[in-house]
Length: 221
Image (tube, rainbow, N blue to C red; front, side, top):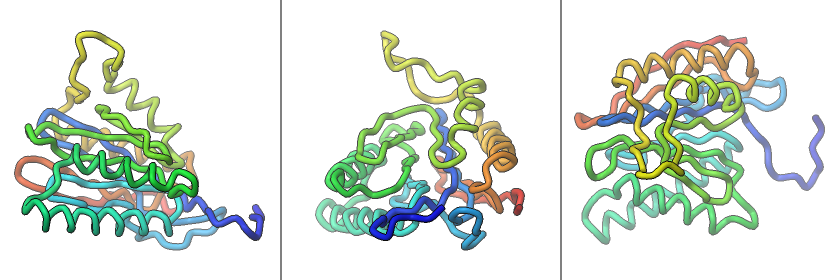
């Protein structure tokens, strides 16, 4: 598809998924970077470690993705110098919201999920729109394959409505290993239908012992 000469945005595709548990958070994204029917690279990481217990997964325009990650890393470094500690995941969620809202008239063309552990050691996932509106949820998906993945997560995890009173925890009942297996299943499924998702899925698991990472091969066509 031909773009207007003054059009500065481009969606480089990709899909991100996050699931929060009682004492862990799983966040994952594929590694394909493409536009139209062209694959630029099969080894592009969409996941950025922002703090010890906080990880950002982003899809969308690669230029804005890198600019946003560098902005947040710089703000976090200033915070560490001023407060002599790492920023918590809920605090980072608010910072990301403020950063996106500040650019609302010329927004970052990115689709973001922030995941990690809160101050109580409980898993948390924050999902965003392009201009900074965000919500703490038990699971989320963003990117070109989100429409294929969210119905599966809804069916398997059945997160309680935020309108229910008294409010219920937005964490999933799965164990850490079950959540990782579910993430692998939904990516394998989405790769069959979405040409912008594929090659590999990078899975990051955050728990009390730290952050661990694994890769799983996906379709390459």
